[in-house]
Length: 171
Image (cartoon, rainbow, N blue to C red; front, side, top):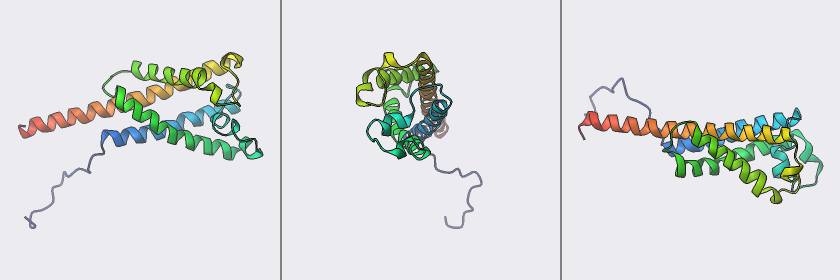
């Protein structure tokens, strides 16, 4: 057996769907919180990730700097792992854009309507302007669609590949 040549078509080991879901969660947290920070700097929204995570609890100068924004973006990436795990556990079998869209809206409502009292630096929902509602709502919808579509696609691809492999092997 040791004298047999290696196959030319050997593939790299496939990552599990769960691992890809975690990568998707972290990436989407970084991407969409980065865009939220840019929207904050251009005054499309009154809140930023740093407002939620740091300015609500720390009253120091550095929370208004770019360092706080970068740290907040990274922290949202880490927190987004939880969101990706929840989507993976509950909705990975759902196809299309709608499950992700609804998931993003539910997250937006949870954060802006239910959890707002936990963040003293964030005004109450009715005190925010309509630009903030629309901008953050759209960012959360895009976030949900990104996570939902990516995780569902990977899950479907993994299962189709496994099914075709078992059919080839005669299992």
